[in-house]
Image: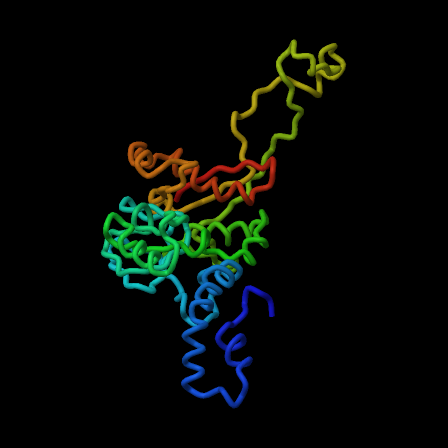
Length: 296
């Protein structure tokens, strides 16, 4: 057993309790004591390793669904704030849990989200409860982040640029009901990759005068074999094909790309959408390989 999958209720409490003390009242008391630890275990350790969609635990952190801006959430529900959310909201693929009944159109961001750092006056459980119930401009906070990424670390470390793995990762990252990976025998995945055959086996040279383009052809020795020619300005090793509905729905909450307001002003243009796809794909792509993003 490793640290991340420790079961506090069944292992740290029930099995360590002497057999003659394993009475219903004692077990219930121990379960109450351990439930907080079990939640933290599932949220911050098990969820990190296995991913939010594969939690095997006690149900203290339920399997999440994609956040829906039109739904009111109740305390305890868990969501994935998916990257593509149409024009009404945007996400970051993090996992959040509702800690106070959240009205519709109250996404896990801004003042609705518990900050990473509590104010200095929060020093004990009493002040913490006061802060959580009034810190959102007199209202309670509705959401707390439990994972930065809904994909488990155990899975992410196996991602690479081989075609099938790359396709699987892309379809999972742009997670919604219409984006699925499929085995090649069953047809293309919703987001799929097509390698290109590049027929440009040639020697590239800079313009004359740069000091690095001396070849025998300059003296006529190899002129029959090396000729001046032009090449396309862009050559791509492969294309990433993505459904147009998914592509058009891409918006971003990542300030390193564009914040939401700037994204609105930009009209969700192709450059922005491309940057969101590339922000993930570039992490897996092999250095030196170029690709193009194509909608269908």
